[in-house]
Image (cartoon, rainbow, N blue to C red; front, side, top):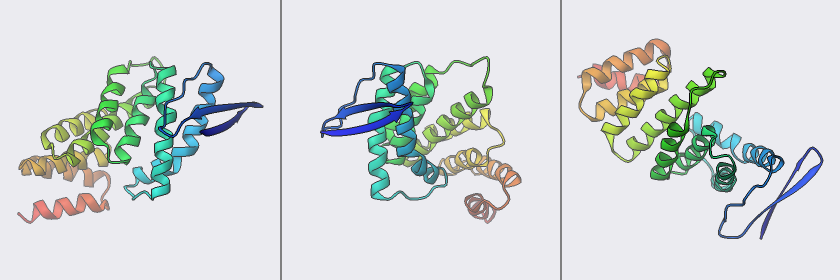
Length: 207
């Protein structure tokens, strides 16, 4: 048995998981908050590497798998919180489990309701879910879906170079070179030194 001990406001909580990584069940907000803190501890460093397109070590991947158990239990306790689906999807993406990631990103978008406050967080999560879904489809060589998802990300965050690069990359694979070039020029206007954007620009400009 694997026991994860978490202290929150002097309360010691044990989440019991067997060797098959069974998802625990939370029964209170105290347990949920404790789980959220544990999840952050397990995933924050790895997520930072994912955001910067850096490879993960085997121990980091193992921590993400532990994080999967925690976030799934959090979803079970609060199924209405869209951000948890996004976080679950991000783990699956980082582990190369693209179909599982797409399922969670779809649930994230389907659960989202525009809030009266914190519009920035809502928009960022929504756009990033579409962006990561685009990368999943790209890695699955489903370039039409990859382009569509990246376009949605750009729609919500038009000044995000990474989203423009993703849309350009997918269009390049589809043979839409004029569209790909226009998108990569927009990305370079926002981030002139982006190596991936420069690589695509040189490839297209030389044709």
